[in-house]
Image (cartoon, rainbow, N blue to C red):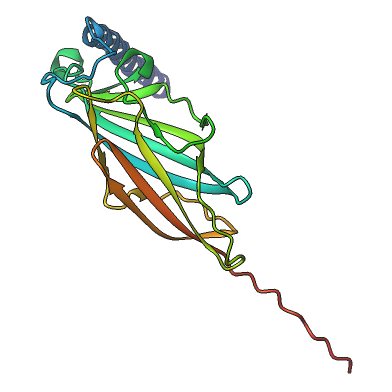
Length: 241
């Protein structure tokens, strides 16, 4: 009898908790749709999202080098796996979380909002996107984060004079394709180290010696100095006894 009563009580309590969780989820989903509708009402994605139109829009750039895939000496290009993260402030995508179920951030498809068209000026092939770049994360404060994973092929001046003991210096020249005049953006390096190597997968042929960057407001250039790994071919002498 006690066990039967316990089962009934547990079932009732569990049912109440489940209903509460479902109601909370449904409410949050409804508030999210309401929020998305409200912030995109009258939103114009074709212009810079800044109220003071005579001021530049600052975009913070972090290029993460995931892997060196190939250095093509003959065709003078470098192929890498990269992650490009952009952060900026959108004056027209802000809200009060208390009015929308305490939602503090919202994933939004990039086709619906303004996205800076930052690319590598020295790429020689269209970059191949590995992960859909369609989603941006928008915070209630107006801050936006957008990340793209891709295979990037860029031009690189390769000098084979000291092969196989050579060092090669390649660069990524980043900037906007359309920003000019009063409609401009300023690029800022996200960190002192211009290229993040936190998730870098080592290459068996190339070792990274140094990374540094130059910031020129409307563009930036990030350099990677690489050294070919020193391989030792050792001859083994076997003496007969």
